[in-house]
Image 1 (cartoon, helix red, strand yellow):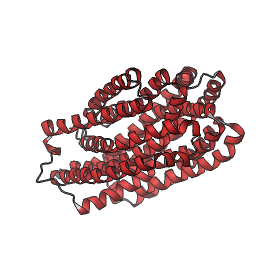
Image 2 (tube, rainbow, N blue to C red; image 1 turned 120 degrees about the horizontal axis):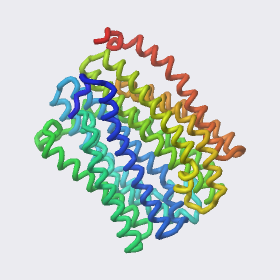
Image 3 (tube, rainbow, N blue to C red; image 1 turned 30 degrees about the vertical axis):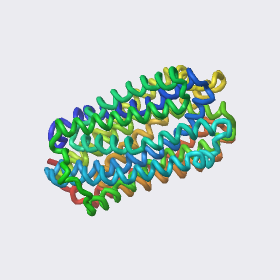
Image 4 (tube, rainbow, N blue to C red; image 1 turned 30 degrees about the horizontal axis):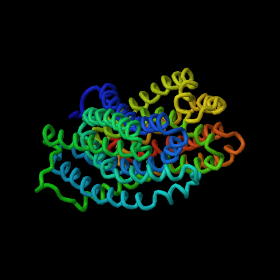
Length: 447
């Protein structure tokens, strides 16, 4: 456990964020391993079929993590204020609700996977494989929810390392099962999906076992297991808004992919490749944002205004420092990165992706700053404004992309992203100063 209400701010944020970064990279690597092995043992066409499911899967996972983030803010506040009973009640409420919610999602998704893919205009030659994969992934949604719920509880008390260890073990298991199911048993995309579900189930089991053995603060007995109506309402008030906000990004990507899907498999492959690079770049930005959120929430619970403001400033400086590194790194490795992720052997597509990344390397600064600001507002419990800011960014970005993509291709997506982030930032900065002037806690003198 890590109490963020005292101690060195910079080291706390960095130490908390690094395990989150590693954990999120492992999450991304799940699908990357599936794509690599399916490409190797089944073929590029099947791998592109898997790529078409990514936006749908992202929306589902982000919706789940959004609810867990909302709960994590509450758990962090209860931990910061020393209210252990409310902390346990929140853990119990989140997991009971999650059981019901994830089962509904699993049943709905299994029944309508093919129709969902048709709605986003997935080509007919990819539809069968994509639907097979997506159905099985939907069946694993309860494992996804429970892992994120338990991991959020651990992070709320400052432990961001333990969930990563279990996720790392699950990642290795996923790779081994991919080899067994796809390479040895020739189960194609079905084997890849089963490997992912089984690995996620293992990570859930390990997290729960660890809590009941080592973390009595989060251990909920049968007598304590109950769904608190008031906490559920508060969790959903935070969580649903956060889930909507978190889902906006993949929905925007889904709308852009819908513009690209009719252009053919080759163009889909190029779009998939640059999205893979984007995803890996965004992971640290969002992880630092989650660190800011937990830090602010704990100190809000402790009513420590000085540390809230200092922590937010420090978080933004860490975001900016990360951008300097990633900008230089992307400019150096942009071509090898494209060669790694392009699923269709076409040098022309690599060059298209290289031009896209040459622009995005500089534009990532805007997303880093906006992520830091969003983390602050989540930590302060102001979830609704994060949704408003994200809607501004997505609506502007998608609108600009609809005009630029037909003319400029993937470069149009890069410019549209930049314009969307810039508009979001122009809204966030003045609102922050207004919010600060109206919040009683933030008006207290630093201590």
